[in-house]
Length: 147
Image (cartoon, rainbow, N blue to C red; front, side):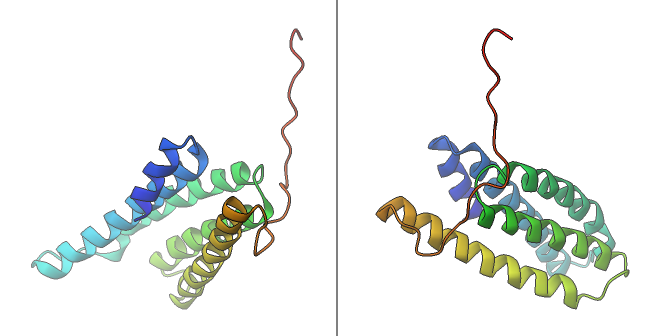
């Protein structure tokens, strides 16, 4: 669903949301496929194989924190928690953290994503957000032409 939602966002010129949704959708598709292959065959992959993908998505999410700071507070906070989740998952795969920490982070991601979705959808359809999304944390300053 994330991949389809991302494609829809891109189609309607929402590049930031479309990129994030498709990237996270491909992450979960990759992880689920690897786990299903591992369970369904005699080949059992080590959880250490997921370390590089978790690190790559941690880096991607860190960039998304910066970009979403130009949108609204709720979206930026969501991406801060997503970044923390990928970092904690990366560290848990290396046995540096207990598995409970990434688990709690995933629950927080779900709650914050729900909050942002309700806020942005109610704003899009009614002109008022049921849940306030907050102002952008960063502001773009256009350079004057001719300089």
